Structure formats: structure tokens, C-alpha cells
Length: 172
Picture (cartoon, rainbow, N blue to C red):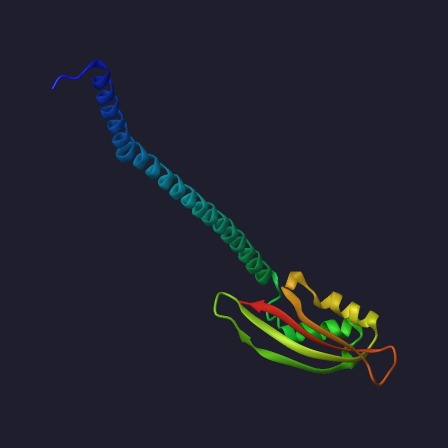
């Protein structure tokens, strides 16, 4: 069978078209898909790495803060107790006679630090006395903080307050 020039050209174009189709279908497109797959994988891994670096930075910050707390605890007076600290501060603020109760809670904590907490109620105090007492109690140099504060107006005397405080510190 002898083909004319036009038929030969059509056959070659058909063969080239089929070859290009197979080349694209089985070589180029899979390579591009794999490239996209790997690029997505790299982006996911980069996001994971950024998260790990952020967590590392947070860990270093917490580690530094922990060393800061350890330094504070080392500088604190030997024999420091939260109960005694609160009583002394109450005396300095002039509210010692207004203490209704002081309830120490058992220490809790599983790591390097244990939390000690005291709940106390002050009755019949002025706002200024409460502010003065809170100023003395809130003590970063002794790692003491007020965890919770509830203030109500005194029913017995007008213009006076009752306050329930939960004061927290950490110990080794």
C-alpha cells in the first residue's frame, strides 16, 4: 500500500499526536503531580517545623521563668510560711483584728514546685485598708499572689467591706 504525501503527513501527525499524548499522560503529568505532592509535603513539614520552633521558644521561656522562680525561692527567708507572711502583712496594714478566719489548704503539686494556699476572711474593713493589705500581700519577691478575691458590702456597718481572699505561693 503506497501512501501519498498527504496521507503520510496525516499518519505522522497522528503518530506524533499519540506519542505526545502518551508522553504527557505517562511522563509529564505524573512528574508534575509528584512535584505538587512533594511541594505540599514540604509546606506541611515547614509548618510543623515552625510549630516545633515556636514550642521550643515557649519551652525556653518557661525554663527561664522556672529558673527565675527558683531564684526567688532561694532568696526568700528560710522558714518562710504563707500563713505567717499573711499574719505579718495584716499587722502592718492594720487589719489583723478584722481577720475572721485563716484556713491553710494542703500543699499540692507534682513537679518541682508545690502550691500552698491560704483562704482568709476579713470583716468590717474599709476599702483603703483592703487596698493597703493587698499591696503588702501581692509580693513578687516572695512568689506570693492573690488567686481569688471576693468582696461584699458589710451588713453590720455601712461603708465597710467583707473580703474573702485566696492567697497562693509556691514552694520547693
